Image 1 (cartoon, rainbow, N blue to C red):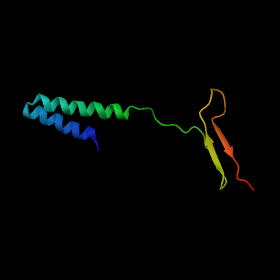
Image 2: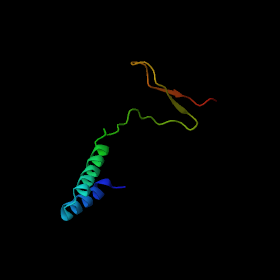
Image 3: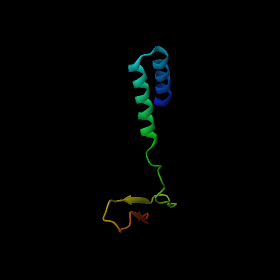
Image 4: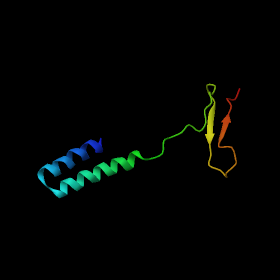
Length: 75
């Protein structure tokens, strides 16, 4: 759902009709959408091509330890 477009429509309707409740609701929707979009951009942490049958195990550990462990396919 696009809250920003809905917020602008409500804001303009509130201005046109002189209804403060609708106006503030529209501004709140716009602010909510802006907060949702302001999250940090996701970044690729690790990339590797794996052979079929292999897996990656991700564990949360102490800082400084390797984040990813490659488990090779057993023969």
